[in-house]
Amino acid sequence: MTNVLASFNIEYMRSLWRTVDRDTLRVSVLICLSVAIVGVSYGVTAGSVGFSMWQLLALAVLVLGASSEFLFIGIIAAGGSALAAVAAGLLINSRNFAYGLSAGSFLDRGRHRGSGWRKMVGAHLVNDESVAVAMAQATVKQKRAAFWLCGTGIAVAWPIGALLGGLLGSVVQDPGALGLDAAFPVVILALVLPALRERVTLLAAVVGAVIAVAASPFLPPGTAPLVALLSIAVTIPFREKVR
Image (cartoon, rainbow, N blue to C red):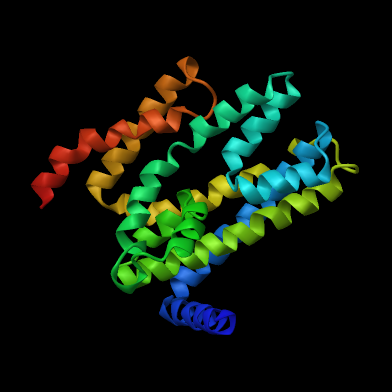
């Protein structure tokens, strides 16, 4: 039974690999590289504020969320309680609920419906990047393949980056001096730029940016992007006109 399951999993991953085109593969690789670089910054930061190697790696593997992990270690480093740090991390990662709904539209389809273990793994891989890459694809099969490729890559790249950062932590005390945190926003910007050619999408981005900037002084760090999602509601009438 184990051999059959292993054979099926290998064949399934091969099928996904054949489905992904070169552009999607290139984007996924760039994202994973940037995630690994930011992971180094996270590892250095966590190590410099007193987290042990196993602690920062456990966070990297189990949480798999850069913003919530940075916020968590920041609160702990500032003297906050573990409960407050966990609550803040959960609040930041609450956006994954919406991403999960989007991912469910292509993961829970056809012969993949009812695969409990795959749903659990897929849920762990849901994040901004994996869903964004998937939703940019044309067909359900391509969306599924892109999601698994990018999501799995991030799940590997982030802990590796954290490990390297943890090892560097004893050498580099100021992670900001490395400038590693600039790589990730640049890659994400390059990813979304093509979509901004559509007027409605550009409008949503501009409105969302204005909302995020205006709300930032009044909200906890990292939560302004959640409020910025209101821009989607603002652009709904325009999307209906386009249809």
